[in-house]
Length: 175
Image (cartoon, rainbow, N blue to C red):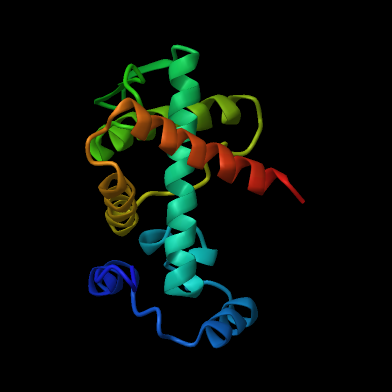
């Protein structure tokens, strides 16, 4: 972002990355996240510094895409008609090339269903996050950054995105 001329856009979404990184982390570890962090960030750690916010959002985007790809492979479909609302989602699309709106439209009902199932089993939420409007704006920013690299959505572009996710999985799984 710094080198491609889009740093001002980054700052508008994530904040000013020129804030002292070491001091920001020190403050985060000694004082914790702001009380209202769920309203503005995908994780508490994301609130520590704009670069961490970007990194956590980037990782979160890949969690969403990867989980939706798995749901698609299993033919998962959710349908809830309760609380005077309908929450329907079918993952019958390629999450690597879908619009960010389609990703979110499928993600929210899916996580609601998974969390409800876990609660029925006495377990904690599988997806313990809240995606407020600022977090969705940040996810949209990440989506646009990724898809600007592959705007055509060709087969080779999808393969490249899948390779990035696989590489990230390996790096996270390695100690």
